[in-house]
Length: 126
Image (tube, rainbow, N blue to C red; front, top):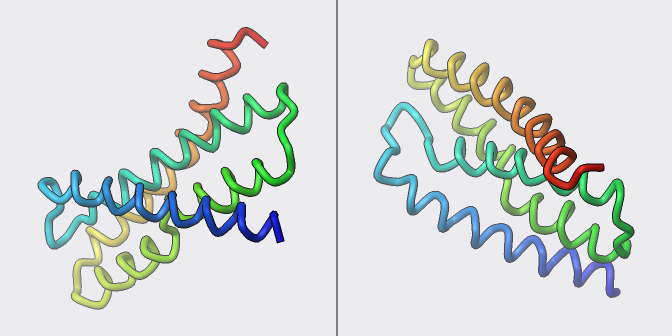
């Protein structure tokens, strides 16, 4: 039951954080580019890279790992929203925007995970 509570609490916290990011990014959101989802996904990827590197060297409880990775980052990042927005762009005929969003999001998401891992590794000198 503790593990389920950890995931639920992390998910709720991550979802609220994503909503706040979307509100801030709303000023930059256009009808053809979902900036809030893009920023949340990239920031989530950076965070998972940093935490991954950190927790390779520091022991944390399984419950805390579930809270952070499955709960918080699962609620914070928005793959299902990303997929829906991409399909919506195709649906309304914005094929170039859809392919751009797809390519840019995936390229930068992978880059942010790697960057987060390397930054944490260098800054913490492990």
